[in-house]
Length: 483
Ligand code: NAP
View 1: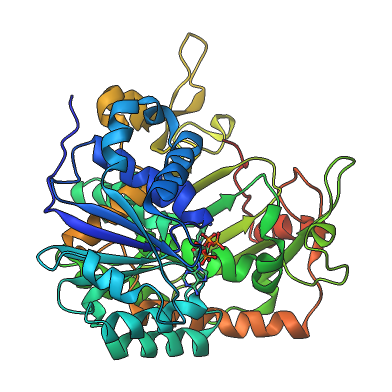
View 2: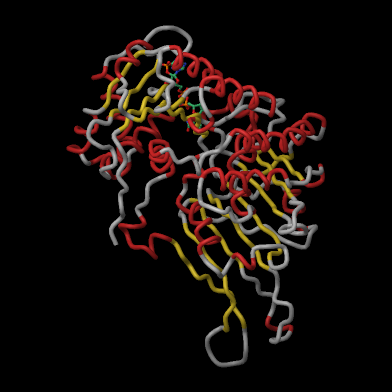
C-alpha cells in the first residue's frame, strides 16, 4: 500500500521563536518531512523569527544542524534538504518591540494562508497578537498556533483567551496539544465510531473501568525550573491526559467536524464529579546511586511539586455513572509507555466452572513507544486435556498490519501543522475546553497547597505504593507499565 498525500495550497509559516528548542526538535524536522512528502507546494515559505541577530544563511545552517540531529532517517536526503533550505529565511524580530515587524510584513505573501506559530513562552502571546494586528497581518488568511502551557490556572487561561480574542476570531486560534495529533488518537475515534462492534458496549453496563497511563522513564532534565513551578498535574494531567480522557468518554458527535467533536469533549469535562482528596495520590521521585532525586534536579530542597499523579475520576452522566476512570502520569517510572485500557466486565456466568479462572476483554490503545490497538480475547488453550482458557491479544500494531509504507505515518507535529494550513481545528483545543479543564483541576491544585507533600517513590517503579492502593481498594489493579 502507498501512503496518500493530500495536497495543500502554498502557505507561509512563520515560526516566532524559530531558534528555540521546540522549533529545532519538532517544528522544523516536521516541516522537512512534509516537504519531502510533497506537501509544501511551490511558493510555500518558512520564516524563522527571534531576537537573536543572524542572517538567513546562518539560520539555514542552524536548521540544517537541527534536521541532522532530530530529523531521523530522512536527514540523509541531502538533495531534499538543500531544496527545503531554499524555502527558509530568517528575520530578527522582537515580540516586545518594533524590531523586525515591518520586515516580516514585507516578507509574508498576502495571497497565501499565513500561519504564525507562537513557539515562545505564553507571556509573549499577547504582545505577538497585538503586533500582528498593528502591522496589518491579522487578517482572515492569518492563523495563529499557540503552544502549551495555556495558562497555569483558570484565571490566567481566561485572561489569555481574552487577550487573543481581542485580535483574532476563535476560528483562527489553534491551541496545540500534540497528543491529539497522534495517529492512534484519531484511530480511537475511527475504532469507536467506524465499527458497529464497540459502541454498543461502550458504557457502564459493559465497561468495568478505564485506565489511562502516560509514563516517562526520564526525569525533569533541563526543564527543572519550569517544571517545579508546574508539576505533573499542570504539565500533563490538565491537558494531555484530560484530552485523551475526553475522546474515550465522549458521546458520538453528529459529524466529524471541529465544533461537533469539541462540543462533545466539553460535555465530558462538565459532567466530571469534583475530585475528592482520597481519590488522588501525588509522588516525587527519589535518587538512585547514579541519578539525582527530583529535589536535587530542580535545585529546590523543599519542593512540594509532584512528579507523579494518579487519580480516580467519575463522570455523572447516563453512559458512565458507576464506571471509574483511573488516570496516572509521572516521570522516572519503570518505562516510557503510554496507553489507554478499556477493561470490560466479566461474562455474567462462566459455563467453564471455577477452574477456568477469571478472563476479561481489554481493549488497549497504545500511544508510545509504538502506536497500535490490541484487543485481548479469551480462547481455549490449544491441545488435549480439557477446557483451559487463556487470553490472547488480537494485535493491530500498525507497522505490522499496514505494511511499511502505510505505517510510516506522520508524527503528531507534521499532522497538526498541516491541519493548521488546511484550516481544520478538530484536533486543537477550543478556548472553552481549556477553561473547563482548568475549572476542574484548579480546586485539586489548591488542595495540594493545604495537604500533605507528595509521597516519595523509587526511580524505575510504578509510583508510590499509595497509587497502587488507590485502585486496589476497589478490587482492581493497574496494568503493568511496559513498552
Ligand atoms: P526556548 O528554547 O526557550 O525558545 C524560546 C524562543 O523564543 C527562542 O527562539 C527565543 O529566541 C525566542 N524569544 C524569546 N523572547 C523573544 C522575544 N521577545 N521576541 C521574539 N522571540 C523571542 O523555548 P522552547 O522550548 O522552544 O518552547 C517554546 C514554547 O513551546 C514554550 O511556550 C514552551 O512551553 C512550549 N513547548 C515546548 C516544548 C519543547 O519540547 N521544547 C514542548 C511543548 C511546549 P531569542 O532569545 O533569540 O529571542
